[in-house]
Length: 276
Image (cartoon, helix red, strand yellow):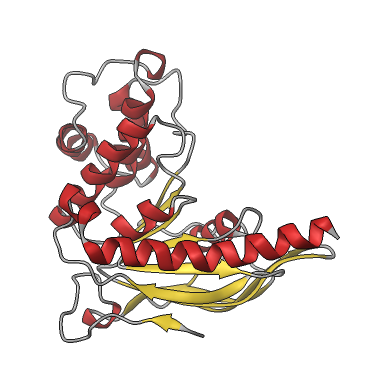
């Protein structure tokens, strides 16, 4: 499996070797009847690492994320989180969905508290923790608001606060900023990086944006092929903390172009097949 390796003399905070693998996927495959989505996926994610997954539409990125979350079962292979086999949703694993996933009849406070209630938190714990995470994502003053009263970006902040409030060991994100405008997306990207710097954890997110993957990921996993597999793992050797200045870093442009060229090769091949 080819790799664009980083300079190992300068390890990033997300380097998987710093604290061992928290998530380990081995030989993971998934098919629906005769349709094989992906096969033989091997992936380790460190305890303080952000891993971005990119690939062409239909390659199974979201399906793989849902397998890690325990929402669906893989057809083959195994996924283990901190030594525990994933056979269903595990405590301490949180998912942020593309379309917010908020309950329209619940306030911001109640939405953020929902995961804590499911986890059996006491009222005192909820009353202490929920306002803290509402403040962390910049929603102070909106505790009593309902989702329809919030902008798209504010709704996504609420969904993020709900996931963070359980203080997860693993945070999974499925195109978390795809449903908001470009300006809001950029703001949320930097907000999430700021939050991660404050409380590092294992994070895996799926995105169609190569720029987003390189900006946020410590590694970028490129899925390709039919059925899909891990074509390349790109080490993102950019300095931390990352901010707007990262976007103008020469290495950022090099990595973005590398991932883009890798994906475009398959897109061009698919286009030629359609023309035949």
